Length: 466
Image (tube, rainbow, N blue to C red):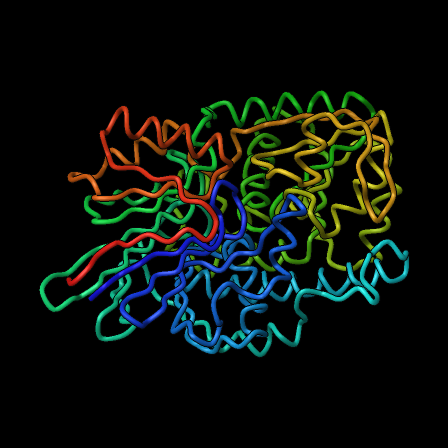
């Protein structure tokens, strides 16, 4: 058995995760993410896929975030018809996430057509709701630690990554004529000692390892999150304005609701209305109750799980007309809306109205990829393009990293320290260039491992004749 790996995304960037294993003539794709952020990356979504989609035998997904799953309908549109393997919660989440992704793209194409700011005539979505519906039957969900046979030579086991609901570290086992080899794909590693989710599973062995590096060059102490959030909220409300938080519908929104309720109960912040303006976030929230076995119950969750995300001051906004009415609120309210990096969704409409208002506050909670509106706001740009218009930034901008669902540098090194025997090769993926290289240097220095930072479309030989 001869084995190669080809890197098709998330190489010195944090989007578009796609890693292709070629096992003799069989092709297995691990993750199938959409490129976001920089225009040069986004344009790759429109290119023909680097290999024939109908030649891919199967796909393994680590989790449901769009930068790991959002290219699936596009790949289906181009001819992929194999099975898609993931955890059971991820399978449920994909139905919500991908339908929403298609709807957003259809809406953005329609807005671009009406306002005439697209270079394409007519503007088209990358894929449609119909493409998603046709693709969904290919998805198959499994339990953590269950052995899943891809074919006679390949099996996968999903371990809890602690990143979001259903997120997994994928252990891929290759059974050759002479020996078995194990390739570990970290997916996105979560944080330690945080509410709602379990800590990332310790992995003891791997012949080959792919590890993410989102925060490979940064330390983000999680224990500051609660007091930092309370301070920012109090300051925002004292400005006689509204606090707007762009947040991922999956993971970040639920974490925010956990902290907001806890802070209100403790009288650390005023009990003001909280509007969750994301239909997808509403749908996702209900899945936490369905998949209770994936939840780590601290004392607070144990008391409040049935109503944790539905308390007296929270309002779930589903209808577009309700969303528009939120623009009329002038003060004493918190609005949480997707997407988390302001690349699309209803948050764009809120930013359009809130950015020019000096009394309002925008809180950037967590990592923002290069080229995203969230990153531009965070870096202090004075104008942000929304719907083809340049919108002045006059509001207060705040930032908090402690709410991130990604392990920071210290936590990544802690997770890597769980290996009892070092991998023969370790590839650093899913991190911007500086972050990936910093983590690579640290691993070489502290652990003395053989480390690579692959480039887009680079191919490596992993095993020969196993």
